[in-house]
Image 1 (cartoon, rainbow, N blue to C red):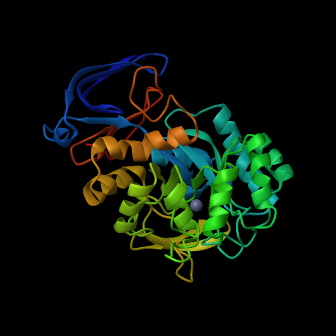
Image 2 (cartoon, rainbow, N blue to C red):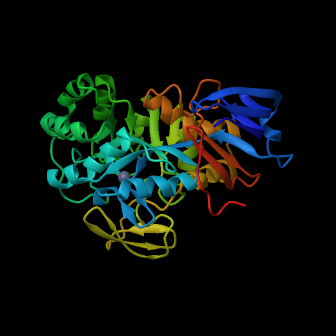
Length: 377
Ligand SMILES: [Zn+2]
């Protein structure tokens, strides 16, 4: 079905006051109108059209966790779509192989046959198990060195688009080239590695950093750590802008350092749910005061949604809408080398989020199909 949306359209080149038309093929056919300076985009109260959000780090929502298997990934993708996310990576926890197999099989089915009314599941972000046992964060104790055999078996179940590893774990640094040759994207995270480890991982082809600042060696001016390696050298990195995981000042510093810093939610089953007890993989977590924590107080993922991430970027961090749209959509698409997502331009997938002037979600379209947004209006 074809459709025309009118409003202030946030394109990679700037804001257009006009119309966006998409066709029966689920792609944007044309964008027409006249340019508006980005600072005035919200003035008229017209609907704001942004590229649908892309979230490369999603564990759960609505009481469901990707590690459950079954229809969890579908329910998670449905819930996040209501918040403007049009594509995501189902993200696993560090876990035994049997648990990973059980969770990935239904994700693979969803990747092959996308369900209507949900964000597109692009594949899997394997967050561990190839991480540092001393930097688990909220990950359970099943960390182990990289195994290409395990990866190939899991990849046959569901496409693994991204894996997080700690390069200082013996064998992992040397495995990076083989991982790339086998088609896996490598991101550094859950790591006690040094600055030098980070630089070497990037030289070997790692391209990003998993939730920058969290669960990695911090920057000290005589020991710049993994954070220093990222700030000095990375083109891409994830950050969790819920304002609990990272101070706004640290996000501003990273924005000045890392050209394609992009937002992820690291959202868990507790997202969109009342305070209480939830599961994160095999572990019990508690949601309270907007945070999700293990019993010892360690932050265990977030309750963030991408629409709130956008509001935090614009209203707290102070980004303009064109820059913010890159941080919630375009850079993540580019990281996965998906040139036809994450941007409003002719020929791209019609993944669109329509917001009011307060950046509240009004309408969402995934490949041209409308999502039911119950809380809009
Ligand atoms: Zn995570």
